[in-house]
Image 1 (tube, rainbow, N blue to C red):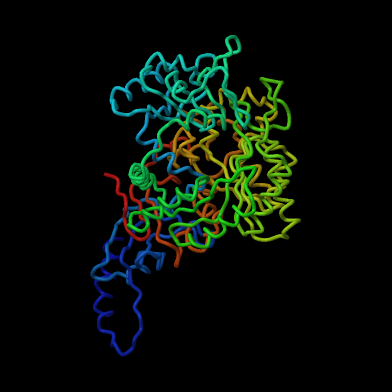
Image 2 (cartoon, one colour):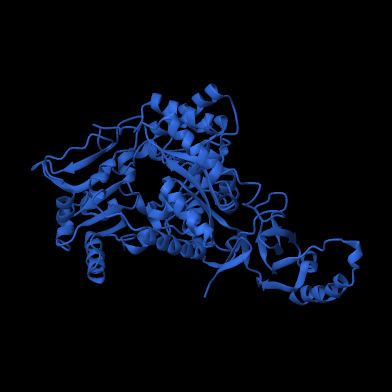
Length: 565
C-alpha cells in the first residue's frame, strides 16, 4: 500500500507543476499527510478512513491513500501509520489544569493504599525537597486509612513536624494538615467556620484533627504562600507536555479566575499554548448580575480558537465520601445527615437565569441526587424566564440521580458531564456504604442517561482524580472494571458503554459541550488538525486490556507535538 501511495505522489507532482499559471486554479496541497492508518473519524456518516491530509492547521481531506496522495508536495511531511489506530484529539471537558499542573511540583499520593505508604511518600518528598517551605500535595483516598477513618494531623506529625504540610484528597473536597500547618494558620479549638464545610474536631477533646472539609479548607490554604507567576507558567508548561503525551488536545477548565485566564493568554502570546482552552469562571451564591456582566465582557475578548471564556461554574454540593453531597434522603451510614447544598433554590435560580440571559453557559457541580434535581429545576426555570435557546446547560459529575430525574436531561437539553474514572470500582469502598444499595444502583448512570436521550460528555476532573489518563477513563466506561478486572462483568455492568460511544464522549461530544463542534472533534475536512495515534487498535483489543493502550503520536494544530520514544 505504501508503494502505491508514493507512486501516486511521484506521478502527480510533475503533472501539477506543468499546469499553466494562467489558469489560476489553486492546487489542493498538504503540509502533513498521515497514511496507512485505521482512522476513526468520529463522523457517523463516514466513520473510517485510512489517510488524512493537513494543510497548515486544517484537515483538508480524509479518505483512502489513493485519494489523499495527490495532495502531497515536495515539502510535505509523510507519516506512515503502519496500520495504527488514529482518532480525533481528546477533549478533557472538565479539568482544573493549573491546580493539576502545580501538583506536578508536589508530593503525589495517588494510588497509595495504606497510611504507611502515604506517610512514606510525604517523608521521602520532604527529604528530597529541603527548601520547600510548605509540603503540599494531593491524591490521598479515603479508603487508604485504617477502618475507613479520616486521617489526623498526628499521622503527619509522625513523619514531618518541623514544616507545615497540607495535602488534598483525591477529589479535592478535603484537606489534611499537620500541627505545624494549623499553628501557622492560627487554627485552634476556638476556631469556627460558618460557611459551607467543616473543621473536623476530635469529639472527646474538641481539638481540630487536621482535616478540613469543603470551604473550610481555605482556613489552612490561605496561609500557604501563593506560587509566583513564573512558577505557575512553568507548571502549565509541564502540564501541557503531560497532556500531549496523553493525547489531550483540548481542555475545558471547570473553575478559575480572570487572573488564571491571563496565564494562558501569556502562553498564547508567546506561541507556547499547545491546548485549546475553554474557561468556565467560578461564581458563588453572592455573585451579582454586574459580576456576570464582567464575565460576559471577557467572553467577547477571549473568543479565539485556542482560548475562550464563555461559561460560569457553580459548585452546588460536595462529595458523597464526606457526606457533603446533597441527597434527597439521609446517608445510609449516617442517618443524621443528608448533606446540604451550597445554594438555596432561589439563589441558584437567580444566578442561572442571569447568566443565561447574558448568553453565558452554566456548569453546575452536582453529585448528590438532591443537588442534581436542584440544578435541573434551575435550568427549567431559566427556560421559562428567558425562553428556550441553545444554552447547552451542563451538570457536572452526577454520581447519583433519582430515577424520575433521568428523563429531564433530554427534555431540558442538559448535557450530562461525567468522569468515568470516578466510577472505578476500586475507589468505592467508602462511597458505596455511604449511599446504600438502592441509590448505588443508579451510580454513574451513563447508559440510563444516554438511553433517555441525554448527551454524554466525558473528562477527568484532574487533579481530583486517581488517574488523569483518558485511556484509564475509557477503560472504566467500557468495562466498569478496575484495571485488575472485576468479577461478574464489573460494577453495574448495565451502565457500560460501547467503545465507540465512549470515544465520542471524549471527542465530538466535548466539542459540542463548548459550542465548538463546527471546528473540532472529528477528522473531517475543514476541522482543526488535532489527532492522536495509539500504539494499538482499541477495536481489536479485549475490553479488559484497554487500559494498556498508550499514545504513540499527538498532532495539535497541524504539527506533531508528541511522539512516543
